[in-house]
Amino acid sequence: MRRSTDPGDSLVGLGTRLSRIHPYPAMVPDELALSLVSRFVPPDASVLDPFCGSGRLLAAATRSPLRVGIDINPLAWLLTQAKFAKVDPRRLRAIIAGISRAEGHSPEPAFLVGPTERKVKWFSKSVIEELSRVVQWLNSLDLSKNESLLVAAALSAAVRDVSFAREQGWKLHRLDAESRRKFRPCPWDRLARRLTYCLEELSKQSSSPCGRTIVKIGDSRTLACSGESPVAKYGPFDVVLTSPPYGDSRSTVQYGAASSLCLSVVSHLIGFDHLRASGGSIDSGCLGGAPVHRKPWFSPKPYWSGADQSPQAASISKYLSDYDAVCDGLVDHLSPDGKAVFVVARRSAGGYRLKLDEFTIDCFSRRGFILILREERPLSHKRTPRLINRFGRDATRRGSASALVPTMNSEIVVVMARSSVPGVKRRSS
Image 1 (cartoon, rainbow, N blue to C red):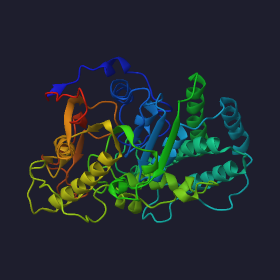
Image 2 (cartoon, one colour; image 1 turned 120 degrees about the horizontal axis):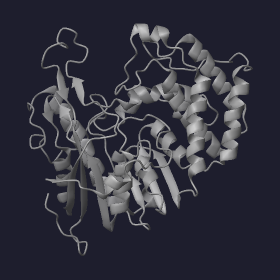
Image 3 (cartoon, helix red, strand yellow; image 1 turned 180 degrees about the vertical axis):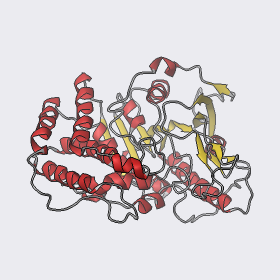
């Protein structure tokens, strides 16, 4: 196993474009994103990220003539689009200045925004009323498309900020009752803070990213389906650069719940009603969330040591089958001399590690690729829990000595290339 002594170490402290616009979970650290681009993405290479999330890897590839991202999550689409939106800092400054004037003079809301399908409250009554006024005010502004994207992304983060969600939450967990009672956030202030951050970042940048950025809300499993690929007309691509989900959304990240909370407000903005989605619909579209329609070539056993007939084993098989389908499609979308660069990890599932790095290598190896690099690095600067309680809501067992289990301590970079590419040699792992 090779551990990183990496050029990325010199990039610590550097950020990608609008890196902190939203506290989206499980983002690749900035320095790793920049390092991977500097090492594996030539300036003239087109890049595909089939799990683009908040767009951090694409935002690192500023020199590429074409960046294409796919994600099933509408919030991911919004954040990635916003990072590449070309907005005049003077216009953004004027919008921020207008917030203080609008806050005290906004009329009563014509509607109340916020989630309606939730079983518990995620906003106080006063916050819902103020968010409604914010939305009404924003809808009254004459914003360009790019300005609307940036403002909507900032609002999505502000919604998260003023909700009852715990600040460092992984899944969507509420503040306790006493904390909720004392919580008095101001939506106008949180929106101003997010937009001020964007203004400061955009004012520092001397130039915009080169080339084009295409972002699609779509299912990456369809990459392997003839005629259904959302990005076929933009390929083939020189580099696949991605960090796939380390597990299925229902048992690990649960992107849907947190994302739908933000989207329940943002979707009331003019032009963004197509982003409205429930948490369940987002999660069911993620890996492992839909029925498996093809017989897998693998057994989970080499990659996960849990019991064969357990419910967890069925979940693992479903997730890996979906992941394999994506890999199948990526091979079809790569140019003959293209490379696939993955950032993966070995998460804990049912008390056993899922060796996603080995599965990734095997998926590409059986399709004519060879491993040119496998590199492990400590997990750092990433919103992810180091320990979780494996008994969840079972109050009778949560306090036991074996309740807390480690999740992930490191990330693994896997780089694959076609064996027919001249000069490509297998690297020892």
